[in-house]
Length: 344
Image 1 (cartoon, rainbow, N blue to C red):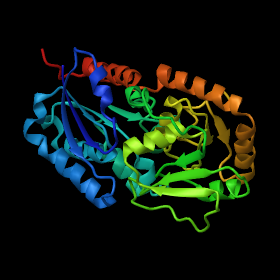
Image 2: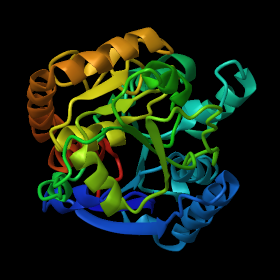
Image 3: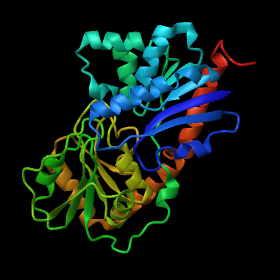
Image 4: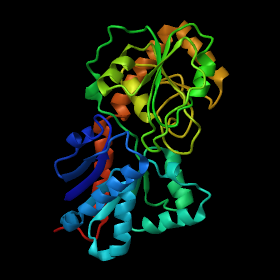
C-alpha cells in the first residue's frame, strides 16, 4: 500500500508519529515549512500551491492523507472536479474548519459538503468537532475522532533546576487571559504567561492590565518554552468557550512534564482530562472558580504533584505519537481495504 502524506509543518515534533507507522504502509511525505508568523492568507496559499504541486504523481498512491484543513479542502476540491481521474482515496484531518466558518452560513456549509463529497474519512481531534461534521455537514458515517498526540521523547530529559518558583500559563490560540488576570491579580505568587500570534488568525492577545505578580513572555524558542514548563509549579490554560478544538498542545506538553494543569472545560479539553485525576477543570470565563482552584493547588502542592504524575501516565497511555500512529494506520488500512482501486 502506497500512501502520500501531505502536511504543513509548523510545530516542533509534530511529525514524530511517522517513525511509529507500521512497515506495511509505504509512506511518502510532502511537507512544507509553515512559519507561525505568516498571515492566514499566506498559509492557505502555501498549502494550496503544495496540494496542486503533487498532481503530476498523485495517481502513484493508493491513499492520500492531508494533515491540515487547507490541504484537505484543496485536495477535496481537486478530487471533486477530477472525479475518477484522481485515483487515490482521500483521508482529511480537520484542524480548524469550525474556527474559520460560521455554522449559520448555510451556503458555505453546503459548499463544504459539496467539496468533501468524495472524502473517505475525516479525522477530528475532539468529539465536539466530530459532532460538527456529523450534524452540521452531515458526514456521520465518515468522521473519526482520534486524540491529538505529542512526542514524549522531547520531554523525557529537561532542565528543572528552578522548579517551583512560578506558576505558568501560555498558548496562542483562543486564550482567555482576561479571566486569568482577574483570577490571579490578588494572589501573591509569581505568574508567567508565554504568548504569541494565533497560528490560524495571526491575532495577538491584548493585555489591558498587567498585575505586578505577572510576567509576560512573547514568542520564546521551543527549547526555552519546554524549560519554562518544566520549572513551573503547575500550569494554567484559560480558554475561550469555542466549538472547535484548541489548547491540547500546551496541555499535553505540561502533562508530559508531570504538571498538574488547570484548564477551561470546553470542546478542546473534555476528551483529554479526567477532572481532579489527570487535571482540573474550571468553568469558562469564571475567574472565581479559577482563583479558588489556583489557590487550592498553591496550598496543596502534594495534590498538584499527584495529579501531575497521573497526567504523565495518561500521556504515556493515550496521547503520544505511538498511539496516534496506531490509530491513523488503522484508519488508512480500513480505507484501503474498502477501496475499489486497490493495487494488486
